[in-house]
Length: 137
Image (cartoon, rainbow, N blue to C red):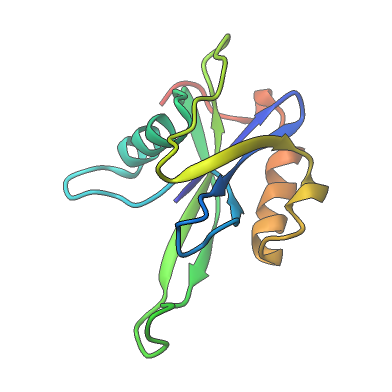
């Protein structure tokens, strides 16, 4: 799952470390759901772990399917993406250096190096205004 977090019209993207199997790939903060966690709990935990940020609210905006890289005969996994809002006044981003080595706040144009279906979700997220998102969850 991923959190599409926007500040001042720009999306937060993190870059995978050189030692990662997805080295150099830019992605929104997020990750997997642990046993016993709800999607909301997992999203909040992953954003805190990867970017040092809290989530005040989130709205589901779409999903992507990822084929198994090790074995194409395995079923795909599904990533759920949420338009996430931070509480007011958060700053700065503090990335977890074991997973990511850099971050940026970018427009939809800078997401070109990633999947077209993720770019579509980013475009949808950037079109949302704070008033169109839900209150605290």
